[in-house]
Image (tube, rainbow, N blue to C red):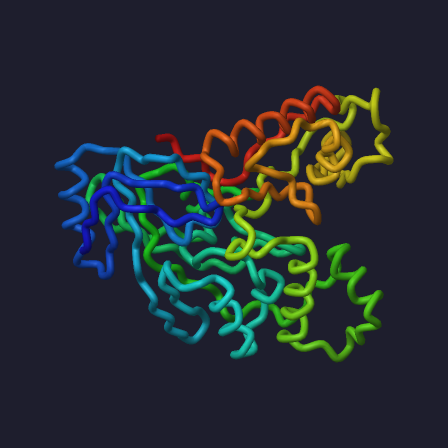
Length: 332
């Protein structure tokens, strides 16, 4: 176990963030040492991976824990993967082994350990459909726990793994998934038609490449353009409560869920009002996707949240829809 003091916390928004303690855990034997250190210091704890979905404070007066587990073992019907393995690299390994179900989740930034926490999803697929179980260590009581898929209580961009005392160090994924392609998502269908793709002869690798092409067209690489992906979730609201004074239903992107509720495309809401948003010197709406907030590498957490709140307020005033922030916002 490596303990560093007043150590920088690298993050994809490139906020200049420092943590009082920064601890790297490299094997299971370190967990009990970590447990004792946490009890002794009585400080807030933040578990991180690649920090691609976290809005860090300028100074975190606590303990940042970075688990480093890089195992990848394929068994008969499942694969065990360490939490610090790159998600996209893992997806490519599954594709190389002709394992279905992961291809639509290609190129999502971050580590494997972060995937179940917010139930990452894209292009019609959610990671919760692939997970068998999640192995964790409770840093508060010093005990190991394995959660089944059901016990994770997955929902839209959420799970029981959020905001608790668990450190994910290993995940088991099913490998005997149905051998069918998921090509029904609108942007995939549009790409296939625009490029005259023969859907009858597609391979897993080719689908992954299509997903990567689509993502690269609209989503910036966090290694090149500071961002945390989609900053707001799509909202689920009662359709008749949407304010249509300024824009009609036809101006919006709506998915009907039942007789009353719809899911509203938040990117479209922001697209419609973004010209009325006061500009910020360090934080901006990405030109190719209105859900993405980018920085100039000089923004503080306060800068990012102030700009995000300006957007939220304008959307609420215009549509009577309250946007919910998707990335984790860490208190100082």
